[in-house]
Length: 159
Image 1 (cartoon, rainbow, N blue to C red):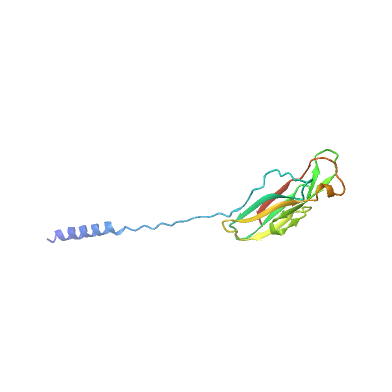
Image 2 (image 1 turned 30 degrees about the vertical axis):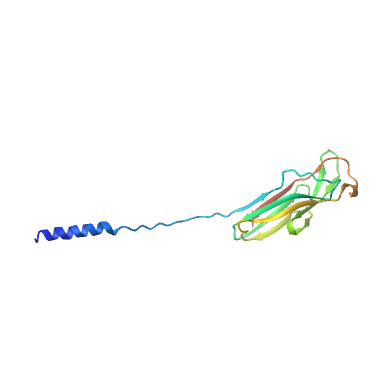
């Protein structure tokens, strides 16, 4: 029996230790990067009715941010808020104003900058955009017949 006792004790300990390690720890980690983006419903080319109207809706701009810091929307006109004629030698220009949401009409002779901060929520912020202009019949001085154009660029950036 004395010879059997160490074997019984060893068998019990071996059985207990084989059932002791039945727990596991799992660390779950998710990294969400900073996002700052814009989408728009505006087509790449918008034709203005300068003979029959004084404004043209462009569409909507939606911005999204999950950043906690400051960021801004920059609206830039290649020709400083004027459409210029396509014909070589035409020095006439057709002025306009850019309408940005509740900020109203903006003269794009310099960049329009709207500074914001923090997150936008999952839907983002949406701004209606339009162009206002003087009807051709009321434009002074009269400009020559031509196709007049400008390029407007909207950028969003962290600051």
